[in-house]
Image 1: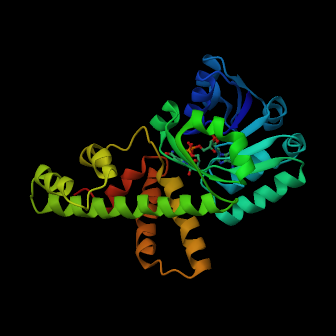
Image 2 (image 1 turned 90 degrees about the vertical axis):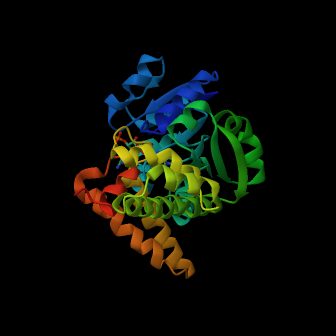
Image 3 (image 1 turned 180 degrees about the horizontal axis):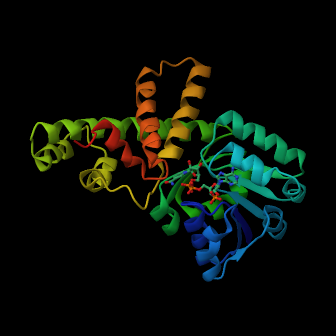
Length: 287
Ligand SMILES: NC(=O)c1ccc[n+]([C@@H]2O[C@H](COP(=O)([O-])OP(=O)(O)OC[C@H]3O[C@@H](n4cnc5c(N)ncnc54)[C@H](OP(=O)(O)O)[C@@H]3O)[C@@H](O)[C@H]2O)c1
């Protein structure tokens, strides 16, 4: 299949590599062209403009930061004119209402649209083991399930467009809440002079444990937030999306409102592009 990938950031790049490795012809577009150069070096075509990539492809995978980025790349003029007869599969994390509005515009341009946000990061994208949540009709899900099997290990149809976006927000607020909670406990352990290994040994055996704790522990201990898997800036974007959606449906978000200034604080320290584990620097400031 000929596939366009719009956005070759942390996730778009390994996704494009994966799709090429399983035999598809891939053409990518990225606003900052140099960031797509590593893909060019492995034989993936890099388009000058988004419309050039869309025109070449049957299917357009969108892995951009947020809804404004999608509007600018996919729905800008003249890219939108190339959408007729193409299927757009939106894989970034955006709000349910945003996804539904983008769907309307893609359909108005003569294209088809489904959402397929993902859980998992760079390694999973590269290996084709992402958890893919699909918002689509059963017919669309059946039509594209082969592609989902190549990109992920467990693609599920969640419901119509908007439902998978909502589920993805539900999962991402857990990332923010869980990691700030872990950072706080680790901070206390360190400041009280308790052995970190003792803390982890008890935690690992308990029902409180989450694999993300173990995964991020070395970064927290070393305060090493370089080579991000997922940035502070985009996790803050997801917290804001969740807060907006939760307010709309009438949830009490007091705990997540407490998490927000921690991420905003990391952003203010210039850590916006760092791995989101950098929130540890705000929770447990260095002496
Ligand atoms: N990283 C993860 O672990 C992960 C996991 C699951 C889901 N996600 C979601 O997947 C999406 C992509 O994440 P990522 O980590 O790959 O982000 P990223 O590395 O920051 O890449 C963002 C992409 O969006 C483009 N972009 C941003 N603003 C733009 C604008 N105004 N106009 C045009 N292009 C714009 C960037 O282009 P430039 O290169 O020109 O800036 C880049 O291609 C996000 O919605 C994120 O929340 C990420």
